[in-house]
Amino acid sequence: MEQETRNEKPETSPEAIHLIAVGGSIMHNLALALQRRGARVTGSDDEIFEPARSRLAAAGVLPAQEGWFPESIHAGLSAVIVGMHARADNPELLRAQELGLKIYSFPEYIYEASRDKQRIVIGGSHGKTSITALILHVLRFHNRQFDYAVGAQLAGFDLMVQLSEEAPIIIIEGDEYLSSPIDRRPKFHLYQHHIGVISGISWDHINVFPTEDIYREQFRIFADMTPKAGVLIYDRDDEQTQLIAVPTNPDVTYIGYGPHEHVIRNGKTFLMTKKDEEVPIQVFGEHNLRNISAAKEVCKQLGIKGKDFFKAVASFPGAARRLELLREGQTSVVYKDFAHAPSKLKATTNALKQQYPQRRLVACLELHTFSSLNPAFLPQYAHCFDAPDLAVVYFNPHVLEHKRLPPLPAATVAEAFQRPDLKVITDSAELAAFLRAQPWDSANLLLMSSGTFDGMDLAGLASEVAR
Image 1 (cartoon, rainbow, N blue to C red):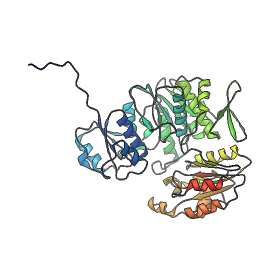
Image 2 (cartoon, rainbow, N blue to C red):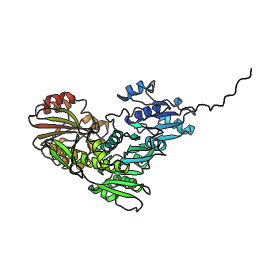
Image 3 (cartoon, rainbow, N blue to C red):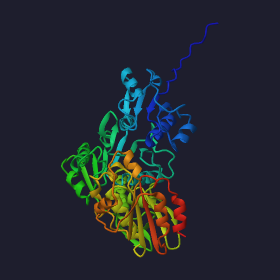
Image 4 (cartoon, rainbow, N blue to C red):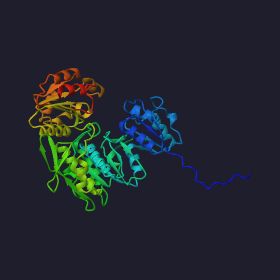
């Protein structure tokens, strides 16, 4: 009997995508997002730490062994995505180039996946994670469809990346750091935004932008990339931003913003609406009030009315690791913050002092990044640590050796900060003992670092400080 002819379309094979340096924070989230979208995902890395290891393993994407294996790169791959952790001579990358495969950096792939969407890109030296998180919170509160790519794990979002076919918009945190080992352009130049935000400019990443002018130029390029009928939203009070975000293109809408009108009562901040209504919020500090204004302007462009924005923002808990409350006692609170750059340090310490003006503030900063430990950059911290009643700087001399930087005498650090009474400590056990010995009646503790204070038990310390 003759077999029946079936009038059916053959199933489309899923994309096969390989990620080089899959263990990175944003890269492993991209791997999981791609798998969720239906792609066949593989990856490689020479080091994979938690939580990436467990998350990749649970999804069946964890490489069988660590290392680089050029034999895993083959002609059947739809794309190869290379992360910043890889080097230009990575054997898998060289094999992909040899085979003529499509090779993307993270920002190139995000752009490719969002070509047909409205792209909102949040740039700036500080505040971009919080602004992005605010926008995502408001959109989700009002059941809007959106995709996103953000550089931190946000409360209520299981991934840092989402890519779908349905969402008409994508919200992207626009990092100014380099795109990949073979693409030296800043990430935020590659997203080709329709709506752009510049939250402020403060020289950072001295290892790739050796002068302040070169660093600022990256933001000028971003501003000039705003297309016809596009929107550029910027901090109108930031001096560096004023130099590049000037209304020069008649086809672009320029929107400047400042800190949202507010009042502070009994350690609680309230936003003021145009109708003089008060909206209690969970975050505080002038920098967060500026972030709220930036997010409100973006949401307005996306059709969210003012009253609906306020309704949503009241439940915003803050972005992870940004003024994160570790513990609250009767007369003390302990906060941890990601702050490490001079502008972030100044904004965060001022915020705590203004929120609790009657309490003594003890603030401890860990110098952990290449810029913060570099003697050529240290003078940028002058008078950025004036707000605390007691200011402490910690760094591990072994990190200097690892980064191939010269030794850093305590006197050099104190001189750079322009604070003679600055306490400089280079041993984490000594730091913990010093902080425990402080009087904590009517005093707050602020711990600031992009690292971990060399694994110090911050939760245990917080429980002793705030009772």
